Length: 160
Image 1 (cartoon, rainbow, N blue to C red):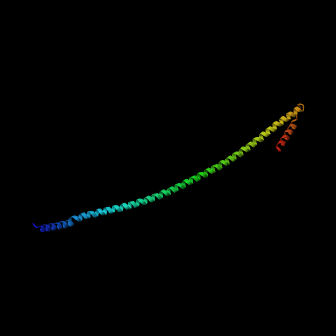
Image 2 (image 1 turned 90 degrees about the vertical axis):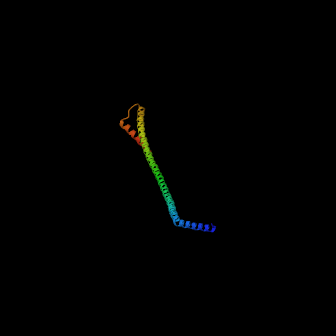
């Protein structure tokens, strides 16, 4: 056998094999690879979209959280202000009640002092009359004189 002929036959068989492979084997493999490539590209696109949606959702949730924090701070500040105002009103009411109670107590004290003063004046008048009676030799004063003396004593005490 001749080497050239063998080499030529091998080349023809190899070229036939390559042509058969290109015609029947490669197209289905390439089609499967193209489908796989499309699936991968679709998956990557979907992943990018999901990543973008996740980023947007995170931004939106951050905005909502910040708005909620601001609103909560406004509510807290409003509650503090309202508590301060309520406390101030309560203090003012307490001062007003205290002033009224002090005034009522002062009036009651003055009234009691007047009553005690009148009672003391009456007792003093009776005592003076009895001292005068004993001084005048145990002769009782007429009721009219006693009454005039007591009234004059009272009017003198009330004038200052």
